[in-house]
Length: 153
Image 1 (cartoon, rainbow, N blue to C red):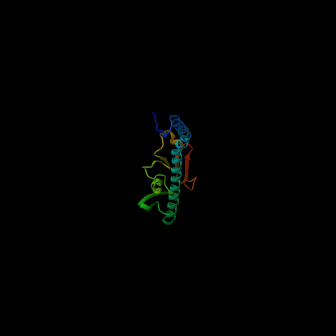
Image 2: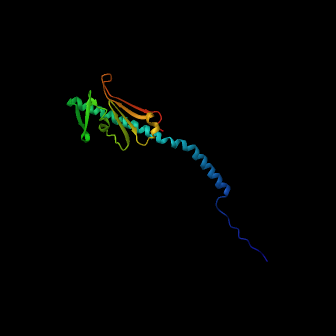
Image 3: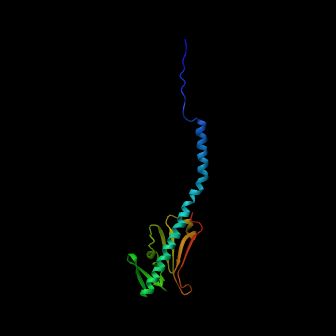
């Protein structure tokens, strides 16, 4: 009597192959994670640079309107009233003139200075990730707009 065996080819991965693939994926993830972890800090810094551009543009447009009207306050697009100090927007009204939203930024007016920080930023980074607008005064005929983005992590 003759016994017949069916030879069927097995397909699939062995356990060792599966473990090797998982280890390789783990190594790739471990090397890529630091790069992706710093993206939020880069996004905050880029957001502040965008806010600086908006503040600079709003300041220049308000100055142009002031040169024409020569008034203590002007109205910009959207009906926003902007107070003028030495021909440029006051620190109190610059954020509104630039269209900076309090849903995206923490806006802190403080006398002749306004500080703008991204809302998504941890409180520990307050002094190292901000935009500062200092209104024009006798020593500085134009407003100073400075972005500090040394540690926006």
